Amino acid sequence: MGERSFTPYSADRASLTIDSTVAHTARVYDYLLGGSDNFAVDRRVAEHAFAAYPGGTDGARTDAWANRGFLGRCVRYLASEAGIRQFLDIGTGIPTVGNTHSVAQAAAPDARIVYVDNDPIVLAHAHSLLVSTAEGSTAFVEGDLRMTADVVERAAETLDLTRPVALMLIGLLHVIPDEDEPHRLVRDLLGALPAGSYLALSHMTDDFQPDEMREVHERLHSTMRSTNPPAFRSRDDVGLFFAGLELIEPGVVHLDQWRPDETTPAVNGHTRISPLYCGVARVP
Image (cartoon, rainbow, N blue to C red):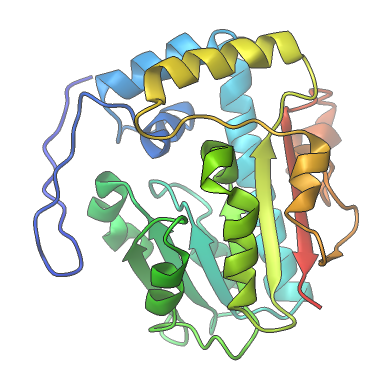
């Protein structure tokens, strides 16, 4: 697979530099999903680290798609049942099928979505995310979860933060190490949103098959410590992100257990327990 040249730009049209010698989480994830917007270093990291994953690299690919399935189900729930019309999706990743805006606007054409990511390649592909219905709106912000005030300020250019917003942190928090205080960051973001907003997240864990996940952690950490080091957390630690919120049934569960439908692998006889928790909760 040959490498391609990208020349993405920031909001002020300043050229951004992409280092194709350093792996990035969004591009590793893109590789697991079968995408082509990744570099050799991303593929090497994925193959090396996830060889130790439960089920090997194929298991990691299965869980990456299960994560996408959870995203689709929770966005449909939020738009169709909870009546949410605004979404703040942080850690967007490279566009693929079933992005937040396409699912939300299929249920509610007037939905407004702001995507946030800090990978220049994601920014280069932002045009794929910015296709919106005429009634709604879709915007992209170059930003980082750890810069919460900046993210909120820029999201407010598209979203009405006096009205409920769904904060989407899908597959993001497990690359935010403890020293960056991820629980505080989530509280800060939720503190900028009104009552009736929601938090939706998924998160890797080493509660199950700990030896394999410890090896995955060590392999990822040794190759990505300068960008996005991993931070697998227990169910109790994941549950702390929802402290003070009203958890939506069935609570904090494995990906395939959250409101499964006919497309969910577990319903089709798939018995794999993915090492990821997920949940959705409402701000009272």
